[in-house]
Image 1: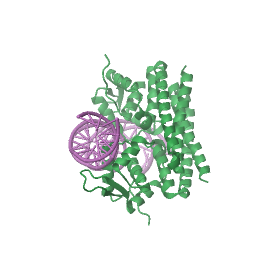
Image 2: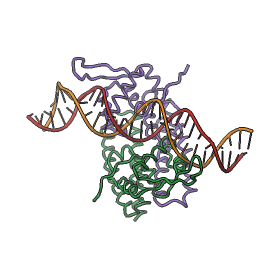
Image 3: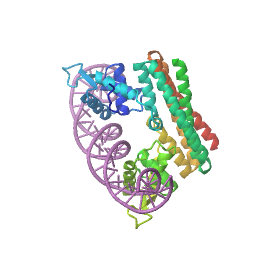
Length: 182
Length: 182
DNA sequence: AATTTCATGTAACCAGTTACATGATTCA
DNA sequence: TGAATCATGTAACTGGTTACATGAAATT
């Protein structure tokens, strides 16, 4: 029934998530990355066009030329059915400790795409899972801060505090989201 | 007078910052990455040992074998003088919008290393600069949220809110740091 | 006796960065 | 008319990931 789908990179996830909402060109994606809050993605053509090419070669997206007579025809991409399956599989992947520690922004991006493409019934359990994982990591971080507090400089302590408060913010946000989605 | 120094990657910055505090082996670094809050760095040997090799080839660090008779001798690295200069140059680089948007954790790491190796007199202006840049970006983000609030889904809005609150937390933290360092 | 930890490294692969290249169209 | 924007792409380089490999010492 459920096939194993490849794990895609943050960039590919972002591209496919955007294309799931509306077809767009590489240039459109670049502009979005350059001008909106999705700005932690590079808008460099050397990242985006090759990524689009790979996705197309994998059969996840399909480009359609809008102005065939032009020298540099604008190509508008949309998700294929297999592409939708890959996107969904990646969005609903379990949240790992590694995600929490190393790709927090990707987790928020996933939330937005889950909500927009799968609805609140999927977004809610996702946020519950996120909250659980964040709180588990938080208690580890707090324990670490406690045991290390004596052999830490003031700079180390302050940095650690910001890290902890960041995850505390995530947890509060997650609770707020659950309320708003109730 | 002031020479231009190469811009190093996050990983190399982290390694050199650690070595500036005390000499250690690749294995020590791996353990730190694997067990402490520096965990957003990969502890994979395939990342760390080649990075150490590159730094040594550039003359920024120097390894000293502790147990020469062993088959796999433990090599303890320390910063060289040129290495200190490279580290300092990288730590005191101006904070860019790109840093704020794409490498916030690196900015905090820089703060810790600046404090520990250059002292509070350097850490304070660094935090002031950080605060300025964060607030500048914050007002852009808020303006964006305002203009886009009508054509945004609830998921987009919630994600955006977390982003903004994250930077607000950074700003509050920066002000607290300035007080504590006063 | 078996497993975990200490300890260092390499090789193939892949994806992102930087820089380059092209050329039409629109705006100042 | 000159600059900015629209629009797509490639090539060389670099660095990180994954997986593999080795073997001693300490622990269970």
